[in-house]
Length: 305
Image 1: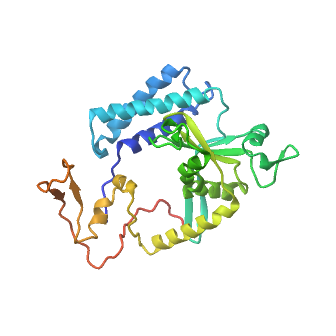
Image 2 (image 1 turned 180 degrees about the vertical axis):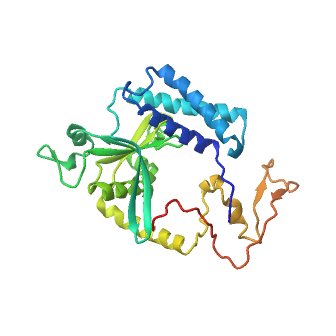
Image 3 (image 1 turned 30 degrees about the vertical axis):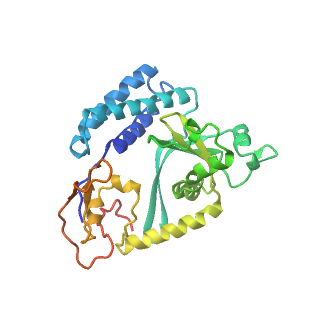
């Protein structure tokens, strides 16, 4: 199945902010390329307007209001990043791409937003168990991984629950400390450098807050088991549906719905209470025959086997 490439405001703003932060480190003439925050803010709107024009034909749900809304959200991200990092050392790596062999004929490709150096003194504060006799124990590099986030959701519930208990906070942040994607970053770094990073920071740019977590080598077992399952599915061209909230941003949700001949893609408008006079919009579909799973032909990103 083929699908026209689309994007939306959250994804476009996020990718544009990432590009902008990378530009900040493109020159050593100033700490963050631009000489003042005001110039950086002006450059952001120039960059954002250019991104809108470049992607206008593939942008969903276009409106001037959302142009401005996400432009201001991006400005918040840029401003917080500037204020928090103008006096900090440059990252060791920015938007660094790595590629390693995971299984026979299977390559794993990932991009680290940032890799930053960390001092022994700082490690002693955030992970004192890793320091013995004033030195970092074997198996670790004095670095942290940083993932830049531009979405609305954050791991900080204290905005609306200032009296939250430690146990409740742990439950709220459970996904942060168990998220398989973060394990993926740890595994990839370990494959490239043979050592573990000290920590991982989920950096929420909308409010300038960063949330720390980490992984151990033992965490790789579950990750590799999952990746083997995914690799086998790709090899067999089998992609079973797993419906979740992120489906609303997927370019293939129409194709998913076409696999259900008795319940096609549909939409409903809100009604005032239980109103039996309202209807639903149903999209006509081409019904697949014989297929039990969604099979999509993705273009190859490498010629290597």
